[in-house]
Length: 291
Image (cartoon, rainbow, N blue to C red; front, side, top):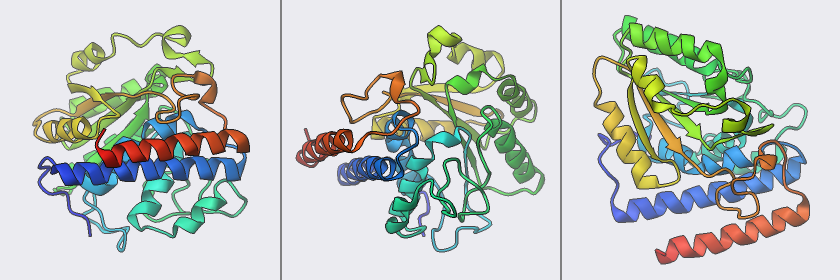
């Protein structure tokens, strides 16, 4: 069982372990995508640090009892980045890593968008962008009504901030002062048609949440220590929900993908996967060396 340790900052050794796991998860993502021949690359790669922090330091969860009633709830609203969640869950022991090779196959539990009934501990079936925070808010409200102490974390993409339903959920959570709800925004600045600021500008994003009476934070979403520290600060907030705007680099770890919106919705070809894995092995060596 993994119980969040009072959200103390991890030791230097634990931070190194977390960074190494994130790199392993990135390699698994590339291998999954090239095997499937379809799927999204940029978002899963840039959120590997956040999901590693979640499954290996932050969340209260038990892979051997995936529906444990006292588990924290993790909602993935932007379901198209599910390869990173699948890879993190396999790394944590929810199912065999061999299953990752079945991404997007007919009959596989690892569909292109998560389906709640196909895998343990998937709290929702995600796909319609903008809906996740509403679902998370409902769960947080149930926890309040039932006097339960589990937390609800909701991962959303920045392009989802363009959806009206998302902002209705923002109002709902603020009204009911759902201080056990933490929303994490993947602020990678891209979407399928281009840069978010060209398609439908979001900035200034943080003041929008402030205006809706949320407690807002920002951090480097590719810095493991910064992610954990910021979540710990959000957990201390009382009387209002919290949002963490996690600034990430789309395609993080694979240089030819980084910052390029064209990788939002496509997988690498076999030769590109070879190059991506080479880069990630090099990155793994630098992590291990502490450079």
